[in-house]
Image 1 (cartoon, rainbow, N blue to C red):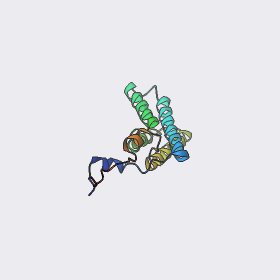
Image 2 (image 1 turned 90 degrees about the horizontal axis):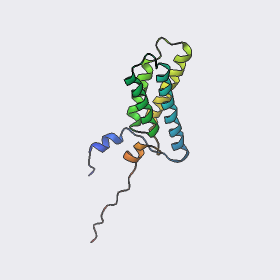
Image 3 (image 1 turned 180 degrees about the horizontal axis):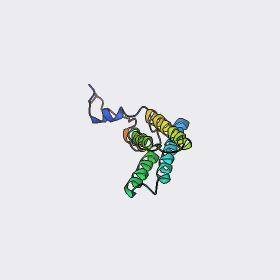
Image 4 (image 1 turned 120 degrees about the vertical axis):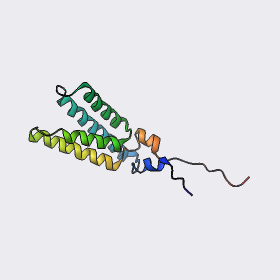
Length: 132
């Protein structure tokens, strides 16, 4: 009988943790989304409060290390979705592509090269044998 503990609920947030080239691709996708978050904040540095800029930095750092990636990417999408209003079409297109990248990352998961993989990834469980 499986224990339905809290870890089961958290593991549902993550699909897989691929390594190798797919893991590197997910790392690059995390870096790309983090970079767009930083650009998004930098472009508005004169009108945003210091706390908001610190929030952008925290989101970017969480993405870079792969910490709670699906949740952080949803926050990133919310922040970026709120940003393109009143901007030119070029910037709106940039933000749209950024949101789509974040959505892809949220759906794919962080990959093997992330804090999430260390915390929630596959485990080898050695069960004691019934033999004496």
